[in-house]
Amino acid sequence: MMERVLISSCLLGLKTRFDGKDSFDTLLTGIEKRYILIPVCPELLGGLSVPREQATIEKKDGCGFWEENIPVVLEVGKDISQSFRKGALLTLDFARFLNVKRIILKDGSPSCGVFTTNSSFKKIRGIGVTAYLLKKHGFLIDTIESFLESNF
Ligand code: SF4
Image 1 (cartoon, protein in one colour):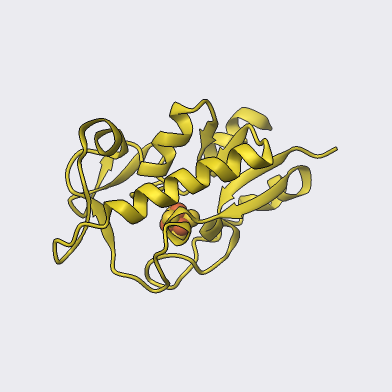
Image 2 (image 1 turned 180 degrees about the vertical axis):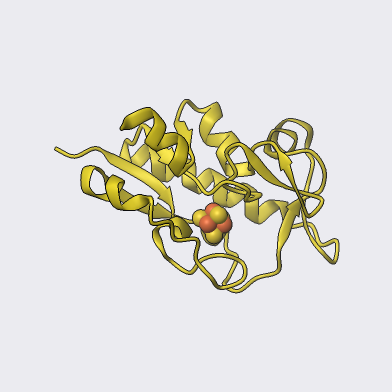
């Protein structure tokens, strides 16, 4: 039976990004033939809508969010940490329910970033809020590129 892999919905072509667009990546073509890809969007699970205002981790990254209570904010300064926390926890529940081991995430996002994320509206080296939680609970998280490097 083909292995199930959870994936950021925008990478699969679903228009769930804050700006109403997707982040479809043609590199997925090879992966789709060998794995069952199940989409998830932590920000929508957290109750946010499309389109929505861009969010950023106020400073630091997803590690700072969980371990040091650093908030996620909108440009106007509104704290939306609760939505990010809820979305991350529901994504963790979903991953456990599906019994997946590996998860492919969209790099650069304040939720899904694997190697880079968004902090103070800038791209920084660091991990997103959901990505950190998934990693902390033992899931293997990858970008499409790192997934390809480790599996093909
Ligand atoms: S939260 Fe993750 S899955 Fe949802 S649009 Fe942003 S990067 Fe894509």
